Length: 137
Image (tube, rainbow, N blue to C red; front, side, top):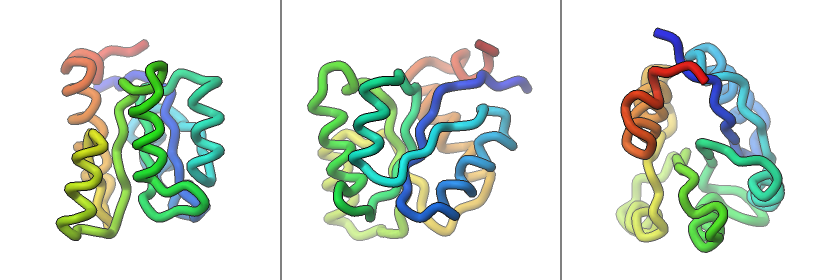
């Protein structure tokens, strides 16, 4: 199956994790995503480039993934950008906080390539329709 090349943004302060997620997205045929090392950089990039998906780590400084998500949802120009949280945390309070902030999905660490494929495809299909995942742009 051909997948569209989608402008995506991977946000993680740990370069090895950012490279891993990026490589998986490329291997799955989604195209090479842009990368940001923190939430502040990600916000700057989001205001310049229209991304169809953001995958962000939760624990980052100076702006956490949850703070990034909250700022994206508060900005009328960005509010509809699908957002997947990458986290090792499964605590109830954190899950509820992300749900309140309107997260689209989670990828729990440790993860597999199949988990990334499923979650990205599922979020894009829910947000843009099933054909959005199948078509080539």
